Image (tube, rainbow, N blue to C red; front, side):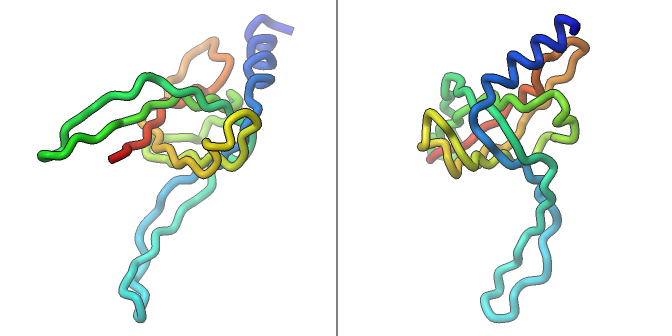
Length: 127
């Protein structure tokens, strides 16, 4: 077993949460009763993950301050179809049940030769 393969196994052992990654699609026609258009989505990954918070940042949108929470979401290296704009939804968490249901937007998908995990940069904006 190579060092990279050993690193990938070690990284995956830390992935104790589960999540689903979806890719938002186009909006359909508005519902005739409610007038609300629904958006389709495609699932690109379902399985184990690890969610690690980074330091929050503050931004001003108009006259309103918003807090952007950044996360690193680690998936197995084989999850290679994830793209910027996809949404990670945490479906189960062993150590932090407050994560369950969190929807995080992917803003970066780093790649490299010797990666041990697919570490996504994701964020959630809070008002």
